[in-house]
Length: 271
Image (tube, rainbow, N blue to C red):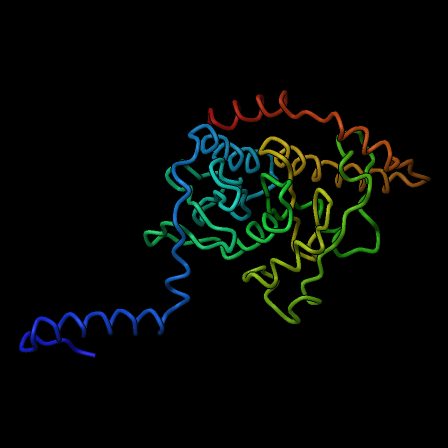
């Protein structure tokens, strides 16, 4: 469609209106992928999100891959996540706002994590979740491919005591590259997570959730620690005395990560 200067003003205006309407009909997805911002997030929340990225890298839970998000303080239907960048390098300027369909509010040409759908779909399914981590925690991965179940062997692993599900991406999407790169795969993962604190991902890693950034960072760190401790206990031979689910519930009812969070954040932000 072309609107020429030789047309009358009314004809030109009508032509432009028809052009805009046609473009909207031709590209509804493009228009739908530009959500309205919830407004500037709390600077302290952004600072803590940057710290969470760096802490997870410092503690060896993530390397150049992996990501952490937090629900927007102004709107539960928005979340904050870095652009695609190694967690150890994330700065406040890298933080982007997304809707729960994982569409960025203001992309400005920046690359995105292909697995951001993990975050959006979990936030949709779990209103109680305020923060999400996806990692490739090395000590955890063997338990995602083995018949040996990851179980709680220490007080720090109370959130593991009721057992953690395993997400099998082949059940959700057949043969894939094992990345949760669309909403359908994200919904399947959120369904596998259920009401648990984490879900293991076969041959891939884990998605961990929590009611705050300190909680989700602490759980991610102690999931790795717990996997290492269980592997060492198995290597000793003999019978292992695992935590009872009721012990885990009582531990989690009073769990507070404020002390380790203060330490982790100070060390990570000093680097």
